[in-house]
Length: 367
Image (cartoon, rainbow, N blue to C red; front, side, top):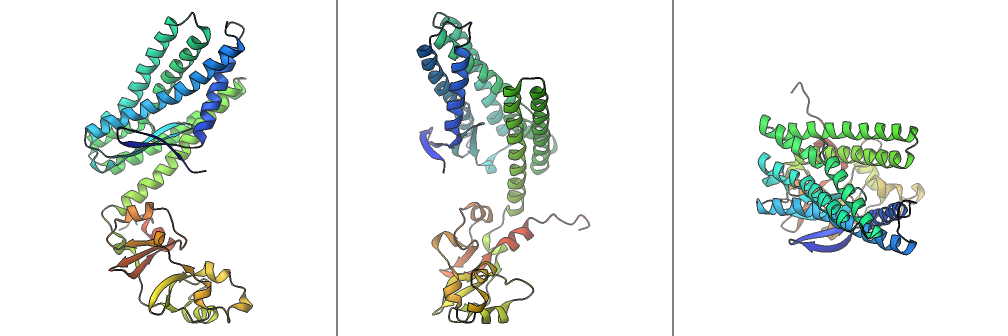
């Protein structure tokens, strides 16, 4: 299932991952179990009400954490694309093009501060409501959870807030944002692996539920750091470049009336057919590559035309040559699996896996 829209805050769209529902249910269940412990005076009905309140309140505090990032970013002139809530917390998708080390530090640190302040306020409120065991117990749980969230987010590794703090300090010291990002991402992977190890130790020490949760958080952080590393490589490789600078120019097209077998004989070099464009009545209307060829049984390739075998080019595949390369690559892929570059309404080039792989190849240290 796709993320769902929740609301808008400060003009920024807030969306929820479907795993957010699982988080709310899980937290409510944990709070209910705590409220039903022998030393709690809450009845089953009161515990259910307190658990539901606690689950909703915790999600609200996670949103408040992310909104604090958004508020500071917007105040400093940085664009926030959207806020996303998920099972392991939230993420503010911030356009980092206008970031400075000082701005990043301010935007990053305000999240943990917000969680810490909320945690303290909720703990104080729970003490004031000690006469209501269900409500007071739920507030105490959410308050403690926010304090844990504040500490966790200060761990020094991307994509956590502490990793952004680390990057901002390194960036200010070295003047090199890319190198600082790589260092903070590497630390993020190490922190994730360390959490997995701590979780395994807790499981062995009989704290199985907590240990499993810590392992999952560590695994998630490691995966996020790895994904962020790839995103950073892509952003660095595409910076300042357009679609027209990477595309493979189209110098000829396969006539739609040509058979698949004839196209293979004429255009294939090596074991696979490189993706070509197909033209019908002078217009480029589709692509023909190895995937399309494989869908046609070998005996039928003499009778099947390129127009019949091709994947049609749709609006989602087409991008103007002057579009920034990063924007083009971050678009949702169309059926053609390629970026089809156009100029003045005419198809002039393709970007496929081969071009992207070449773009991301590490530079030769020998020069």
